[in-house]
Image 1 (tube, helix red, strand yellow):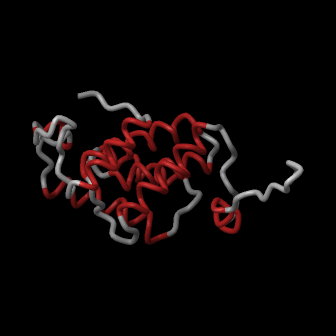
Image 2: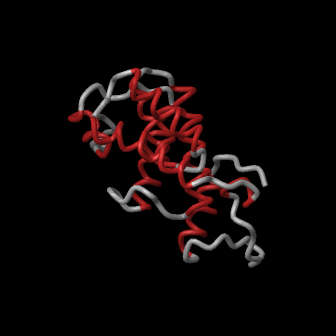
Length: 170
């Protein structure tokens, strides 16, 4: 089954979350999860541990702008291509560098994996928070070609809604 990011995909994600993270088709059939290439590939413990170590190294060392961080995240995603949090962080790093196409591709892949898994490995945020960050912030920012904030205060402003007066002016 080919996944594309659309309103239908987001509906499928909501459907999966609402059904206890089981992959259930709209016809009610329980199917094979699309994770691990439809359960046809194996990820060794050693490879998984290395991928996680690279991810946590970037997260814990706060390498926000270094090329080294992107390299580590790319290596992590190559070792474990089913680890969606790594793709989310990659999307954010690409947005920092104004590489919107690469950011959108990484966010798209993260959303595909979120649909496949229905749960997060990195428990620093809830699964719905990861989904919201991916879809509303990273994917939409990359798709709209808007500039990524340069400081954390501007990131806080993502939640701001402009107030429109009765005469239509801001």
